[in-house]
Image (cartoon, rainbow, N blue to C red; front, top):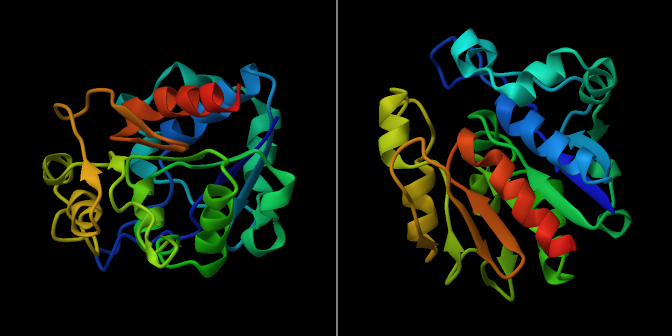
Length: 224
């Protein structure tokens, strides 16, 4: 069982002068969920190498059991520091693809041609496609038979109210909830910061950081 995890290479939070990137819990929780299930994991990003970590996800109140485990895991840190360049990975080599969120993907992965192509290939070939929190944004430009991939699909992603709670509504290039709805997705949500993983066929999406393990777990069920 081989799983490709794709992370953002974007580190600027709009024009705020602040940093962004991927959200640590949304990488660590799926990484260990997959690893503990015996999966072979490859991590890739548009630029390769060390992807930018959202500094907020490194703060004490954002830590979980999985992020603590990552802190003590030199092997995982090496994997993260040496991500493959996205254009150099092939769908044929993997059984599933997974996208952790953080705000970074809103700026690069949403429109990254290599990423979009991979998503379309994985989806067309019946392989699980997973994305959590802001990462369902990576699906927005993916098309199947000339229609948006998310059209008519049950989907979840970071809610407008969660974006408002972190006070970034006016900073982000778009709101994940609005865009999924605009493209015809059947958007689902639960109360802010609660766990939600939505499965529609082999598409698995989750609402927020707390949903990371659940989304990864659903991807594993599909692979089983």
